Amino acid sequence: MSNADTDFLHTVLNKIARRYSKRGKLSGRMKLGTALDHPTLARIHHFFGVAPLRINNKEETHLDFDRLLNEATQAQWLKRISRRLGRPLQVAQSRSTEQEASVIISRLRLAFPQLAMLTGRLADPQSCTHDLFFSLLKQKDAQTLTDLAFQTAHALVFLLSNHDPITISELVARFFEDSKALRQGETRHLIIDWVACCYGLDQDEDAHIWSQVHVYHDRLTVNAVIYGPIIYKKKGIRFDWIARLYQQGEPATLSWSNLAGIEEMFCTEAIATPRLITCENEAPFSRLVREKGRDCLLFTSGFPNSAVNKLYALLGPRASDCLHWGDTDPNGLYIASLLYAIHPLSLYRCDRATIKRHTEHLLPLSVRQRERAQTILNTIEAFPFPDELACTLASGWMEQEIWQPE
Image (tube, rainbow, N blue to C red; front, side, top):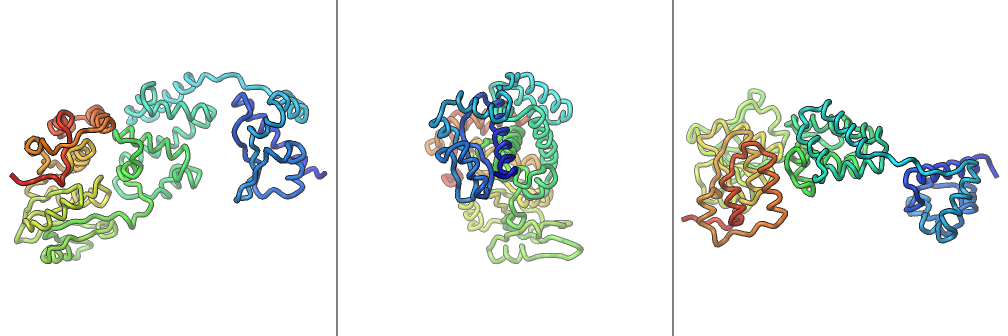
């Protein structure tokens, strides 16, 4: 028997001892190693038996404690492991997670005063954000969670002020040590929950949450569709291809690369200051294109991405009027408020009067949608469309597609 085999078993038993100290019982599965050699496997087989050991297709060896306890009681296994280690196995003294959490939240509150809404939710026992934080604290020691919380808070502060597309890989490299931190697992869940908390979003809407803070898997996929007699200047060169497509009755698709570095964007002299209409969904946008009006049309494709926001910021101040056509459910009105924050706009074909005119076609709100409406009202100061949201809460919401002219 080699010393390496014995040392490996001793390492495994120490790991079990720490697990027992933390949890107070032997349960679940524990990874022992990957691609273990035959002498090492023989050694752990000899100690634990064959039945509780499992090797998966990645050559990872796991110890299944439920199967282990079929062979002997927990007390018997604890005694055997204790005898082998030469020391008793003890459960760690119970921690005061409430006190630890209070200390971490207080430190976050002092270090990040701009995250007051978040720290308030962390301290609120009724919030999901509080529940997630406490569940992590039960799995980690206070220092580990403090480090993770501060890393995440630094990333969050950056995201709240960032307006340019950034990839998940770039975000990880900038703020986190683990290259897979935001691909899956607790760090991803924590930052998504915190961003959702700051923006009043539903935690299940991952794609919308990342888009809200301009985080993408690939910047090349950040596009926007626009229709109008539009010209722009970039590095002193005049580009009129959007206007030429408009003359053919076709919208144009701009990538983030197209938008980067644009110095000025305006309309042709023939229609110097048309209206700018932003449109949430594809079918109504296509309908507006077919109507062949003299307006500029910007397709948001649901929640506006960085390219949509950039185009709206360029064109909004130069338009004679800015309008938004979208659904009147809470998310639809929230989308309108995101654009309003960049440049003021009015609702088009989805205002209160239009909603009332389509009363018999309104759809009832789900419980989740009602909760979303309340979240918007509670988290967005001076929400720009309170009348429409109140109408939606009282009577139901209107899909874009059901709109009909008077």
